[in-house]
Length: 420
Image (cartoon, rainbow, N blue to C red; front, top):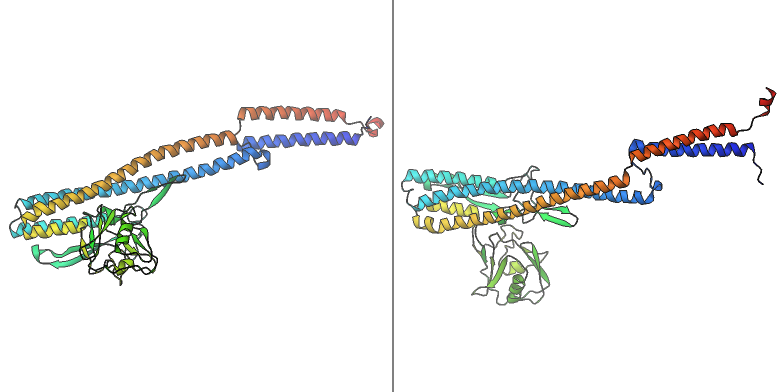
């Protein structure tokens, strides 16, 4: 039989009372915070799940922000290109009137030139539009600086025809071909930007080198880039092999050999071709396509290259010149045809923006559902049942009161109690 002393009884009572107080404090904290886990040791499994759910919830919230930003960007691009279609509708009205011989006297030609110049200025302003963060909508990755704030640079010259004065005679694209992308779901990306060398181009472009490449052979392993896609050129590759590699690169361009064994590159969709020699390579320079003095795109074509194809701006400038000159045949045939081709390209890009917007809408619904689902799972794992927790607290409180009462009676009387 074990010997029970007063000290042992007192220690056991104190231990039980402290344990009750600890449990009551734990439940009290749960009631105050609404959470069932304060530190990982309280429930390691629940703590791990909570961290996982919170990580997923943070990711989903960021995806929702990216989706909202993407939708805003696409809506602004859509609105901007809608302005382009309205400008083209007015230009087509002027072209039809010019083809019918309405603009015959000098005053009408002067008025027509003034209106087209204003429409051209607005077209450039639309092309240089920026989003709320100050980024160019159609400049690729270009954000602008003091020297080149806009992706499209207007070139002016004094024109006497039609009393135009200082009028726009050209527009150069100074942006790049980068496409802004946003992660809208785990491992899922959507490109929301359309570079200006694509959307503001009217016709397919043909670049014809005027350099005979009969004896050309690459002396080292090199690489070229066309529209941002790198193509490996091996030592010993001649013009025919290079043409095959370009045509098999999956690009919206096709290469061919001209009658003088010269290289010809033609786009299959309207856009300005982007040509680069990678690193220290010289393939496109040696083939006569890139200017060795200005090798970086855009506008880096060799001066000897024959360039066919027009941007929307060049097309409008040509329409203005033909209307001022009174050439009804060119206005009614070529110019109206070019207007239709340019408008078709704008509408194609508008359709692409619309398709991406619909996809973004579906992604937004999916992300909101995922957020609600994760929040519910986190609540079930992290939250407490208030009714059950209060009941447990009241039960523990009653047990503690009983323990105090029993403990008070179980402590033995001392000698002083008998002396009284």
